[in-house]
Image: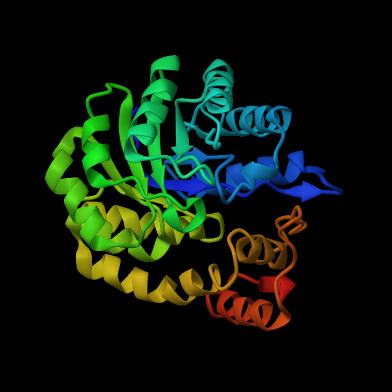
Length: 295
């Protein structure tokens, strides 16, 4: 497997503070019908930091079961503890995941050498593919392009989810690494510019809600049909904005609840969004024709 195309950062549905298995299965089916190429459970959008190791196992296993081999699953396993990350990565591999998503360790603020050693240790502990995940706005540390270049020497480090929103960073990764690593947008609003630069896809939040339209956008961009991709990007841009008006995944869970797909329940310290933001989201969903009888 090569990590590319439209990859959905799946939410984790809860009901009464437990994983809502039926809602998760339905969400996976919704993604596959919409043309999503890879499923990514247990990432930031999946509230991974509030899942126990057993709950991560449950979510990954359910995703794999519901996907039924139709699309690969790349499991989020990152933490701020290298040993715990390795344990989670080995668990994901044993369950049948095709790859793992590994975020830069948060809170510890490791040096670039510490980041390099962390990712090497995780990659060397498993045989499946590893996607690096750089999101300094959440972790407090930036994985520099020079360090990414060093990490391309590790054979099963094949992709990076780059979520700085910075085209200069994306360009430098491409200049340094070329085809040795797949550059993936980590933000919906940068999916199109990343594809225009030569990126390979996006790990998307919006595709939880509109998998078909995000699939159209990514397919058009990867085919070089940038006028079509631009039209879809502009059509969806108000949704991209509304889904990040508060911390992810607060708005996307609210959207899925408005669409009748799940309860929208969050785990503390996340909580329901402000009503004015929910109203903004409801207006966007209605404009896109996504509410139907739920309006």
